Length: 264
Image (cartoon, rainbow, N blue to C red; front, side, top):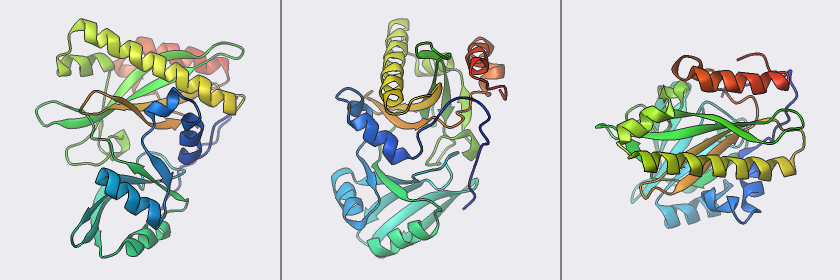
């Protein structure tokens, strides 16, 4: 499976591995509330999570752009796996959990995590799932600041929302408009996202010094509970905002340049 790598030439350290990020967040009594049940893949953990949650996601512990992410369901005939391969979505079935796990390990360069599936909130007449990228940054010696948001709206019938996998990028005010949220609720959600972003950034930066940026992917479920799906501290992308939300984009660029990032 192709490996995406960025040559980081600027000062901002990162935390490598999705499971490590979840473990750090689970150690804090507040941030643990945002983390779906997550573990390294094994037969015992896979079966337990399927029993508890019905559907799970499997993800490379190290990876990006939705590559290698899969959704697993159990049926009376075995197990089904819908997974992303480059820009395509592939459906496979397996008779036993051992066959499924062997396939996942064989087709991933890194270890795999298993995570309880969140029934994502949707938007529009086609009920497209979405998640929200919160960009948090700090200038050297400064405090963490939530510099803006972008929304990733999934392509119909895709298991991930990533732009690379056919998703659309919206400014967050377009999401609120399409959801027909009243102004008071829009502001409540922005405040909730900002507060959660700052708590996560502070928690993780206590575990890893020298961090100056994070892209935190949040999702609301069908009951409007907020979850964190992923934290990308290795070169998180915000360039799609350049055209759709230029003020927020310029703010992110100002912060990024303070720690030596000039690529966006």
